[in-house]
Amino acid sequence: MAKRTAKVVSGEIVEVVSLAELCRSCGVRAEWVVELVEEGILEPEGTAPARWRFSAISITRARTAWHLQRDLGVNKAGIAVALNLMDEREALHHLVRRLKHLSSG
Image (cartoon, rainbow, N blue to C red; front, side, top):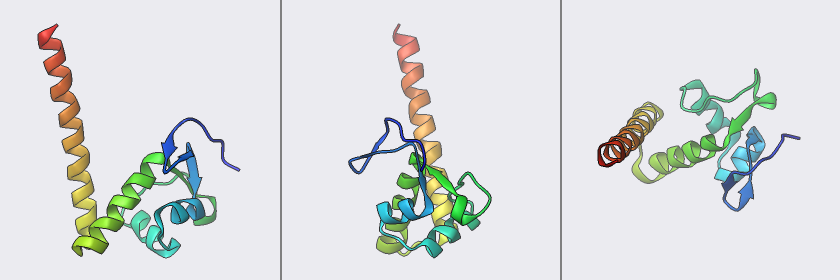
């Protein structure tokens, strides 16, 4: 069993999850998650699906990917681009906040 620490995802405290736990948490099939890994959208630790361990952020990325595909009809290549842009936006947002904090201090 994977070690669990203090990150809350859907009412559960998790650090890493297995493929089965990720699928259960996101309501998706394992084959779909494998496709996300093959596209580079998710990057698990481990060498084979039965041994994969996903970080808590993978749960968020998988859920977002599922919503993009299901609700907007975005294909997996588009999901990869969208998630990368979202990550970059978040990083820039944090940088701007940090710069504002430094300039006001």
